[in-house]
Image (cartoon, rainbow, N blue to C red; front, side, top):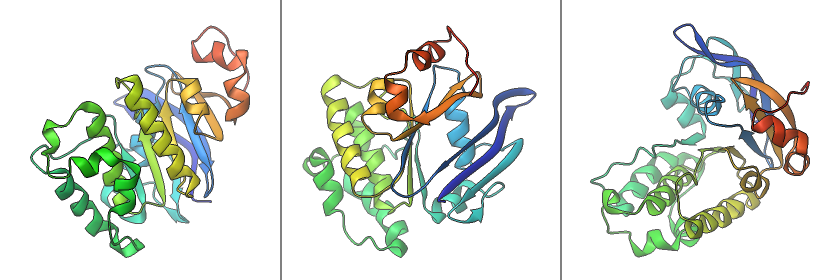
Length: 238
């Protein structure tokens, strides 16, 4: 199993953000973490990536215990997180950003950026443009492209389409579908069930930091019970 999260909890001071979360993701699988604002989705993936301490449980990645590993070690192992804030260097050009990431991914076999430019033609057109001057959608493409340049074993995306125009969202989702089809597993944090259903094969629904449903994404996408849970109007036993 590529990623195994077992009974993981995350707390801020004494406030629990995530309680006893368990799920797994393997090669050939795309998984969505669903839930409304404040459900604990971002805290969960940031803890998995080593950006937040875990107050309980275990995280294993590619066969290794990464529960207490720092973020840089987890990234070197092949887990690439694209956070909500994108975290780009605003004074770097598009190409300089990708080239910097490319160097860190060479040990996993990547030698060039052609397939990233094929996925995101706008980045090729703007390869000499400063990242801080790109539109929000273009910056998101660059953040995802930078993650891909490291040749990750697992791509983790925290609400990649939030606040973007409909046309940009369509372009991003098409690119993400191609990435998944090529065999890169994806963990997608999302609020929109329909959007998640277009990409993910499995899903976990969170509410107030707890797992309230898990199962096939196809089932979740057409389940009124999941929709009620998602908007906090009903409860079921996981």
